[in-house]
Length: 145
Image (cartoon, rainbow, N blue to C red; front, top):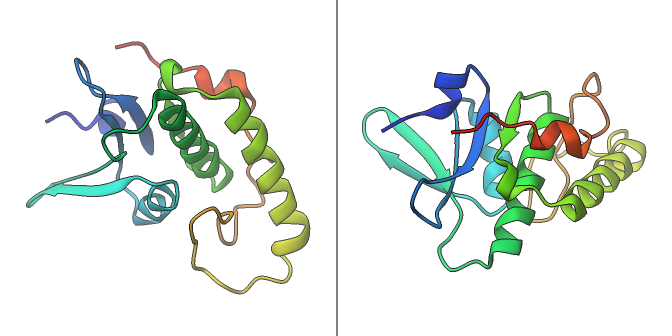
């Protein structure tokens, strides 16, 4: 089993498994796992060492792209080096997450003390040193396989 984030030296890689419709996210940081779960990824393991996340089977391609893009953007907003495969980039999701992160930083960051991230909620306590949201071109700059 290949763990692409280790191979590429990044915090997280989101991609479609070759010859499959499965969308995989691999990462090594437990805080990144929280973000992936928030975006609808399900944790999978092969003990003792392998941990990855996968989108549920049966999602339309547009929904896969929306969730994958949202996850990459939220990970980057938290300061992670995250890549998403070009075929999983959704320009609409980039714009939506950019607005979500900005709203959270303006209204929620000063008043929120919760570290719980629920479905559809912005990330708790975002890294304020990271850019507000990545540009679509930086999201799609993913290494080809």
